[in-house]
Image (cartoon, rainbow, N blue to C red):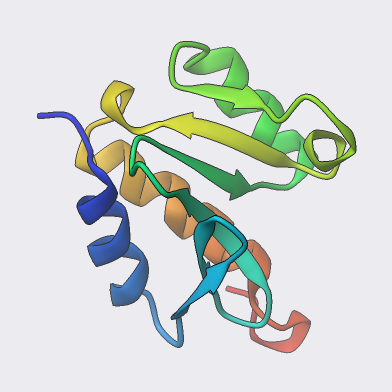
Length: 108
């Protein structure tokens, strides 16, 4: 089954200390900082990975993940096409991004 925007919201809000707030034309999910934004149409999300995590995701699942094509992409922001992920793959990506967004003292 393919992931949806509702899956992203449910998974993100289940991660400890995650909050949800509007962010321009998107919905942002953050702990100490934003780690994922969901497009208004619910079809894509921009996920913040570390550069090496971004490279791995884009290499292993190029149909699902692509670096945002600008300076944001060089900072690790990666567009995920939700319909090309299942819920487990989405959860794995969100957990990775969430861990990277924790305060430096709380990183797991």
